Length: 330
Image (cartoon, rainbow, N blue to C red; front, side):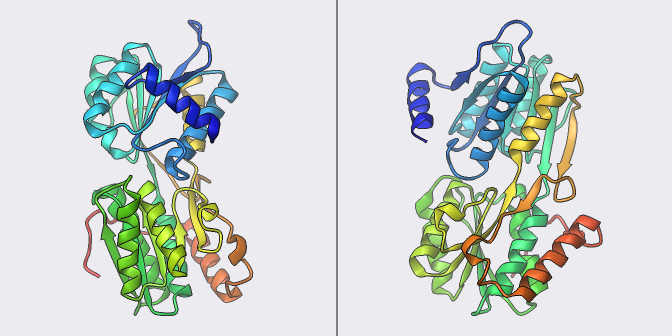
């Protein structure tokens, strides 16, 4: 962590957008960059992607660079900067990078772009969709099974399709476990404001929620903090977040963005990059559920069995969690 912070400070002094670079490149070395809307050490999806970038460097010997905390108004400039330097592949972590990628891709056809949770595509642009509706359905199912009050909550980030999707899936899972459960959903409008996440979760707890999930990146850590302070259970997101509050976070879904990133770099190295839409879920081994940690002995066996049955049905294809990208009424 200390090393990462030092690297970030050095990068901030040296460059405004292009961020940190690692590895020495020659003319035959692939250059790969990652742009993120949050910090690389967020404990969530930014960190999983960053870790994958490092693994790609170790596995394929590529030169890597990354930029943290990229604002919407800076995305096109960040992509242009990397492309103009001859980067072979640039990842954008979040749907927000989609339109900037399309704009820059036309000008730099030799640079490939991959957008996580995007919906854009062209010859040199690929959108990678993580089927987190599957895992959030399961976390909602578990939340409702564990709830003693019959009220659960979900703290979301910006109200847009890739965030509405897991929020609605959480609701579906909760209703599958208990048709009478009340599911509270709040869109904070932020992925980085910890205080907003905490405020939203506290409001839910005041309304009786005793299990709270989230889909809000760094904002979600505020929701977990609220649960810890009030003594209610929380669900992590995108990475095993139990270490944020070991006696609070029951389970997390783990998106292997890092695995997808490493796989994509390997495909490029083999000349197999394809523009278009790529989907990854449980069946592909990209999404997993984290261990229960300290809750392992606290969760009744019948609940574990029911949860595993739901997961297996998703893998087998007998349970297809619908993709809902517009908020529905409770």
